Length: 333
Image 1: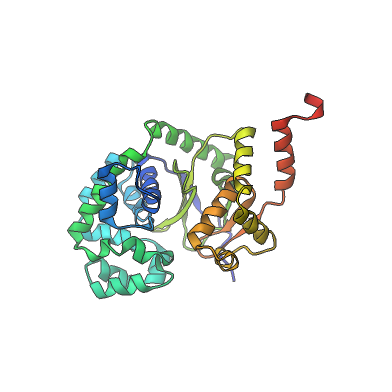
Image 2: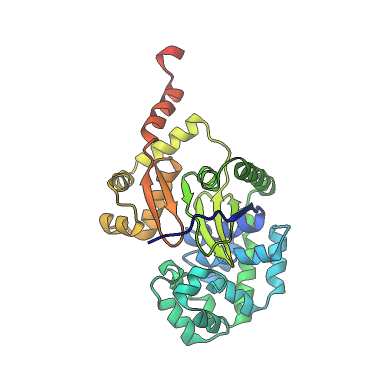
């Protein structure tokens, strides 16, 4: 079965603190909140999104609002929308995967406040990646205006998650992305920018939008909005040998990660297979795979319809060169 098509979609890089903030909110929702300010912790608790997925569906609000893609512009866009429209975004009305898995009629009815439709959506095992209840259970149980107010409160309080130089870092990342797209094929550019994700074009995606962000806990996020595939990736400067060696050591320091690496090397490339084989939760397996990708040991290929992890066969030779560059060789001592 084909997982896409060979026609190259149009591409673009869109960068701004709005997208970086939404990714940071997703990471903060998933993690421990002890170090967050009282205001942000309270706002995230009120939103009730323990899976972090709801914030990623708000990419479309920022995209529809247009430039500048800043946090204040995102806040203004959210204020201008009524609560029902915000709920449409949260429920995936503008994402083809969620419409297919959840059903357009139920998504629209739930956005309008139909509790029975919302319950059907939350119970569907593949809708929202199986995380719908954890991510949306609180927000869809509210009336539309209260949903809007709680989303706004979290977005406004979340500004503390971004570093002071976020705007400049994201502008640099946008220029780097545009340079990569201009000088390389789309798959090669995406693979380099995302550290090991090779995108396979999809029938539904007329455009690919690259969204650099700054959140290390979520190095790669795949999302959709209307006819666009959104690929949000952690922007970072080129790493030196010592930094790459640290990432390699961190990846291999955990026995479970080594086990997962070995399983992927034997052809077990689906996350669901790795969950079954290791007995770990899906989120834990994804965390380990992210560490292995960070160390350039595994790559990810595909799209939202179907994707697999593979080992990078060039990794052993790259590691030998890396170690030599760090410890030195007989010729340069």
